[in-house]
Image 1 (tube, rainbow, N blue to C red):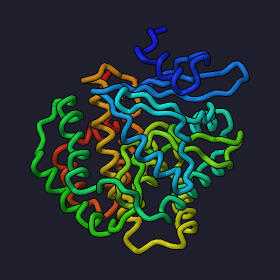
Image 2: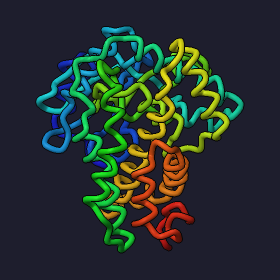
Image 3: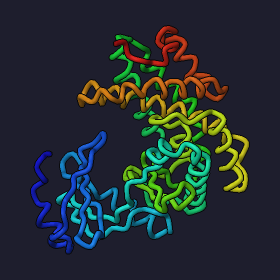
Length: 329
């Protein structure tokens, strides 16, 4: 077990948890570390260490306070020292939606219904005090595919044409996300906690520090085209209908925008997962690329993606696309 970070004992003592036992938890794709603190009476809290310069807990705290102020189920903030990277938060337990569904597959539909309903509640709120999900951000994210995945495949592609295609495809989205909604940006089964011991209970939100103001379809895509678990297409369709019912209807362009945002997000994720391997030495994410690529192909089939689909046809060989972007052994 790695050593505990410097400053942990001082922070927990100041927060009133100095006598608690400290249990490190496994991490994911960032420099953040998490610990469970447990008192002798069984009471628990979660300690997040997001140390500068690689991490900054201030955005997490900003979004968490806003969500909790608006009756969304983010963890309560028990103590904070953003300058040193420390945040003590409510313990949501161990029942992540992803893990729960692995053990209780029959709960899949009610769990997704509850997740969709939580999104609908978020979208009924005015947008939060966050930066806009503007064209520069959409373009920067989509470009991760040409910056990382294409070179990893030995491809030289038309990067200027790629940006132009996305500009044409995403312009209608920008026009329809004003005033917009709060977009959590990483809303999927590994970032949703089941708080009541069953799938249909209120769901806790985590990993929302990158929130922006954007289009209501974005987090829906994140949930229903999950990079980390298979969501059957019939369930995706059913949950889209459930969302429509929960928000009282959608405009005629919503499903086209859903495909646009799905393609943009999936292109971004392919690039990120490649970067995690090539730059950060985390090859486990490569195994998820075929799932993401399959969703990308479904999105590209929508007529709204015409310019981007044409770019893929001209720049990405059929052999790579047929194997859904999987890396050679």
